[in-house]
Image 1 (spheres, rainbow, N blue to C red):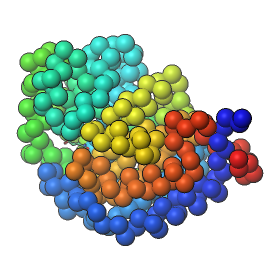
Image 2 (image 1 turned 90 degrees about the vertical axis):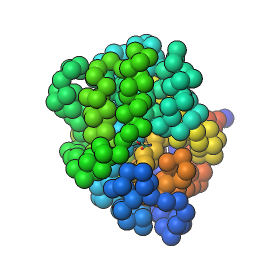
Image 3 (image 1 turned 180 degrees about the vertical axis):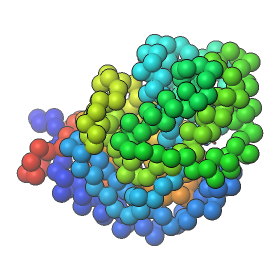
Length: 329
Ligand code: GLN
């Protein structure tokens, strides 16, 4: 029995375009409104981008529109912390478990105070930001966080000032989380400094194309196929995709993995970034989200592509990109 599922670029291109046409007019979900800036983004925006290991990107729709990266930034900063501290320390200081609860849950902190959860929910992400070097130095930490995101995306990213301001005046729940972490000794820098940097990283503007490059970099073991630079050690790909597969869609992660089978991470700005290790990175963007904070159209589009090409990560076949445009099993 053959164990590889070889996908050609043409197959992938067709599936991406079909997904776009199929869900373009789907109007379910609503823009996030607890961050005022996000409520006003055009709900019709929709784009899908797939970045391949050879550096080619397949795009359809609004892939150059700059939107708030929001929680997808948690993946990048988790990589930074894994690089700096290693897997055991991350496990010890933050953890790698799903909470099964909403991204901003305070209850999850209370229930798991002995065992912090994961850098991919707000509490663990604020904790991860607090660990970034140089501790105590806001400017130095910000440079490290932004530089890491740019290396993963393969191009410059800039802060959306209006989003940062909007989020800074409305992030009371996250402030409560930062101080609660302090009371459990699970934050490793000043709570207000950590909260501010977390808010800032969430307010960075990225495009679907950039996110697909970040995803492809993870899929290729830290090798950015656009810049040809190695951004992190290859052994971290399995760790980071494990985190994404466990909690990338918060309390809906099980449903997502069951139906789609792709380690992925969502953000309330409407982005979703998915990694098929060794094969490709995918990103989709559409502002309206479901009640768990995951973009409705982006989920439908990625799920369609995964099902259409039979790419579920837990299938008996391992998906790889065909070297030439010939083999279809
Ligand atoms: N900045 C947002 C928050 O902390 C990120 C949430 C998200 O994208 N799920 O609420």
